[in-house]
Length: 162
Image: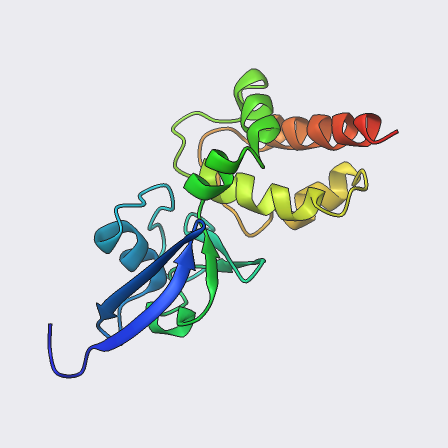
């Protein structure tokens, strides 16, 4: 720690966190290294792969492009928090059932992005699903199973809402 470090306080997965942080430390590095929340991954470090996707104040962001100090006073939700709350349990089950994950590296970011899309309560078309997850790269599955899983959950949620 240096004299340049800053004190920040924010909420992560429902728990208040107060830490001293280097001004240049990215949010994803802070979450992983300082808080031990390793569900969000570091991929490209340029904001194009989506592996570091988290929610800040309800909006998905790339954790590699956001500094931890920018979250002072914010609410941050990681895949661990979304999983623990049960918010994405149906997506997680569908990803498993439809073989929409293999190595699992992209899965947390993919599920976080999918949840944002499905939060509207509508049933998106397969093209809309493709468009929405286009910022999340998967090198294993070929995307068809991922789209199938998201589409199935959208239809299931719509049917449950009737």
